[in-house]
Length: 247
Length: 320
Ligand SMILES: Nc1ncnc2c1ncn2[C@@H]1O[C@H](COP(=O)(O)OP(=O)(O)O)[C@@H](O)[C@H]1O
Ligand SMILES: [Mg+2]
Image 1 (cartoon, each protein chain N blue to C red):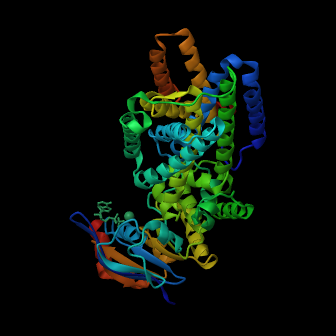
Image 2: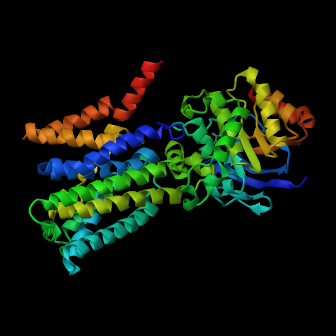
Image 3: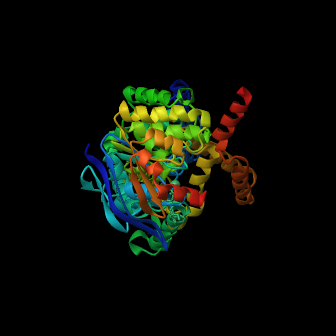
């Protein structure tokens, strides 16, 4: 498998805090990669660096072989690289169906292409993906009226609507009712296998990520602590230390 | 009220009724032609403000600048163009619209990157600066303003003419905006309002979208400025063209009163505001400014979501 995303020695500071310190990681075409680490270890910051929310202070980021380290978030998204947020971001005063419609690829076009109504095919695709996320009966509700967990699912469905090549998910199971987590893992897998979306998933729940990811990178204090297949990372003494150290 | 489930049938009924009123009004009540003309002007004000303030979440206190540009462009072209009245008026309107759109492109590129309250305050400065510049510029009459050429028709026909012109403009503005809000562009405006960072991260071309929205508002405002200047026959830099404390504030109020970000809210707000204001002038002379101030407080305190929002909440309570 070839590398879809390559993060090379990325450093990002907030004032005196070095949130990412020479971080390198690779996500291969077609896989589900995991990113773990204690709270404050720099996982979310790395997502910000990759998707152009944060400017990097050092290092480089390659997507499909070209550098995106100095692009802003919109052009990066148009290359097919999207993210979701730990605290969720949806368009709260718009209905779920409208959230889906404006997340379609064609909404990224220039002004002239925006001056057309949403085609039936796009609406139908939005409905299908809402059904996939288990939100079909909420399609006419305002996104802001959904529960936190439902908003997470909506945000996931919005990202799929855009047919990204690579999707970065920031703690997709956090705040989700534990009885629904297995269903969510199943959906993430189906997005990967059926829709062909490569995933990089930040996950706090060890059981979930061990189960889901093909390979895992562990961050601590802004640096890569360990990297490899789930069993190897779980068995790594330094990883255990980092988790027990903050627990 | 949402886009994908709105029933357009009732829209057409209201639009038909308004069209009838707009066409018959000046004929049935010729004495009120000027007041009716101002009503249509208020509708343009509220609609154009709402595109940014209601749909896109950018509260502009500077939209009056585009109205003023329309006033002055018409006055200058009609003074210096050497054209007969109606040709001069038409040229003035075109020049004003082009100038206002250019101004919106420049201001938009410079200011629409600013978010929240800073944008609001910046645009407030824009309106004040424009008034001061016009009041100090001899070419446009400086502080004494400019007179527009006399309307060539018989007595009373001027009011009727501008009443119909402003009605046509308000109707055109409403129809264009209504169409736009049904396209992806309308959804994109709402997305920018609800979460600008998310819209960027989803790859929307937010900068051109925002600048286009403001330019479109500027276009209609400039046309309304040119027509209004001709209807009044005289423009004062601070009290007519760049009247930020009156027209500039009313735009915001009417949209909020009717219901920001809804199709009919700005129209309804303009009607209620204008009629109430006319009543104040008739029955509370001397106190009309105080009454208007109190009305503003009442609007903000009791109708923060506007009449449309209040109505929707009532209906929701009734059905649940
Ligand atoms: N916008 C920001 N401004 C200042 N400090 C930040 C910002 N975002 C993150 N940090 C700091 O960077 C470090 C890493 O945070 P984060 O990337 O959110 O960690 P994680 O997602 O792994 O919990 C923390 O010390 C955090 O306080
Ligand atoms: Mg985080």
